[in-house]
Image (cartoon, rainbow, N blue to C red; front, side):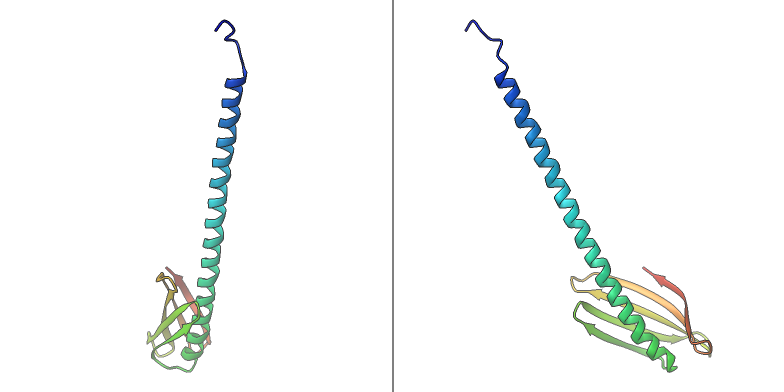
Length: 123
């Protein structure tokens, strides 16, 4: 072959590599976006469980009752225990179990005299 100064083959290889890198990048972006949406959905469902548990446990702590209870929600299970700290304060501990088995905890102190929650912790 006398004429080996062609540019079609290297140009084609470069275009194919460019398209391959673009498709890999778009695939990674799609996977990251899907993970973000799943994490956001999980966060809001856990917040729903947390709000529901806090609402029910506050109602029970407001009556001055001790002990525990649980509630089955369509997204998971909420359990709480109420223990006395002093005559006027109660320690409420929440345990949230998300549908896939993820366990989330929260606790707060409830003041019977002021009728308010304080020292909120989540883990």
